[in-house]
Image 1: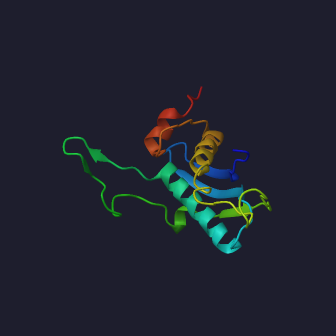
Image 2: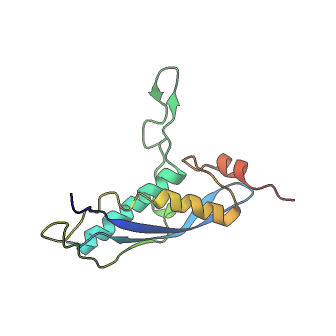
Length: 154
């Protein structure tokens, strides 16, 4: 094989963390991507933003709680399985850099697929660390995990 095809991206997130309660709020998020020729710029941007929202939800809210006695999911519906809503994502944007990949295919395009989700959670976790010093590597990053990993104040 002479060629390899990838899409690339970078995620940037800013969060606010309440050091008393451990509550994390996303303030703004930006994704910058390159994915070959965008065949439809509007839907490509929408797909990237949707992936970023999904990544924020995975990082901060979404957890499958399993009852080990019966192998039953305790939070089996949307009343108990939390996903981000509009109020959770105040400012988000996706930008695509111009790129034509001559070797990808005749249209010079690449797949966008899960490009928006892949780094979104890590960007949120790093923003939390930058905001308050708490380093959490276990999703979802809940209040108890943030409070437990806050640096000790002298």
